[in-house]
Length: 73
Image (cartoon, rainbow, N blue to C red):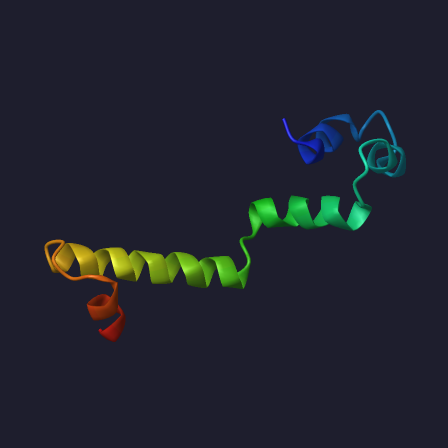
């Protein structure tokens, strides 16, 4: 269990300010983590799309093409 998960589970019984101070986490970090779970960032989505395209190119070449040839495509 991460610190953020702990805060999420105990937030009903204790204040967010107290939990963040106790676990040495800023409130903004907690909120960023909470939003990040539901909505991946644009950068992460772009990376996932790129990785998928690279894997597809590697599979289509039957594993013969290396990084340089795949990048050229």
